Length: 385
Image 1 (cartoon, rainbow, N blue to C red):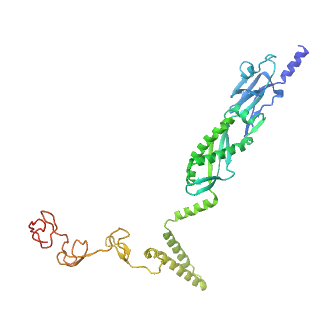
Image 2: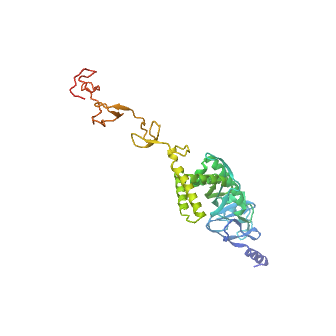
Image 3: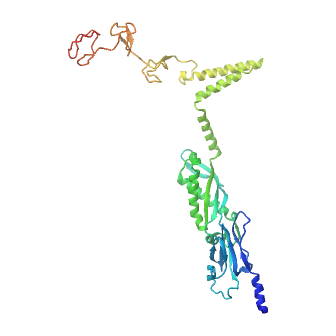
């Protein structure tokens, strides 16, 4: 072997023979394999692991993308070699190329949030300002497109290098989705999943041009301004109390019990009794509020029972507040003894006679007491009323 051949062999032995990448980080999207002088020995082994893709770049252009597997770099199974055009030095000579490993796994638990409130016109509160935050999962869907549009010639590209761009796009799509969905602020908590799916679909339309895909999108919380939340809390508290009058009576009873338990002597006892009397007055006013009809007066007005259901009603009303029956009942005489009876009575309270008038057997006309003939058709009646 000549000296020249030995020099060539020594040079070839310096070329890379195994090309692989073991990712020890959790946030690396792209890694450029360090090839000395960008020269790769023909017949070198390329190992691409699961959740990886290897991209060969020759003279600034993407030559080929390798999916998971083991490959031998030669002219037979490497499409990129056909682009070299002049493989002048035979199969033992090196090829110049850059090799990029792209991480195609899902990058989970990436955070997003609104740095400033989002303005929204709400049906219940009018114009409100909403804040929101959540998480999403991202992966590289098209390694070649990702290198061309995002990573470029970076030797090491991480998620934090594109995180700001992604967050701005997410907030924009989030605001747009809320405006289109027109979900009331009070109902947003029940629509987090639907909102997230719509936002994910919109984001992927934009990210497709970057070779990226959002696989999961979560809305963890959408919050209203503190003052609006405070008003909602008060409204909820009022609803939890139920009947305000019953609550006042309960509070008055508790206060009276506490005052009665104050057994301190001297001035303490007097103060306790004074408080008890004061609370007793409040309690009396609370219990008498219904009877007073909300007038706030100190004296209860007189009541009368309903003739139909017996419910107590204020004097002077014409109809019962409970059953709607007529309160004013006229007086009628008994058909037999002329005793004064309540209108609608079926029997006389004096003689016990029925108050239902007899009817003509022929035409069903009502007969006067003691009538022997029907005043309508003249039919003789034998029944005495």
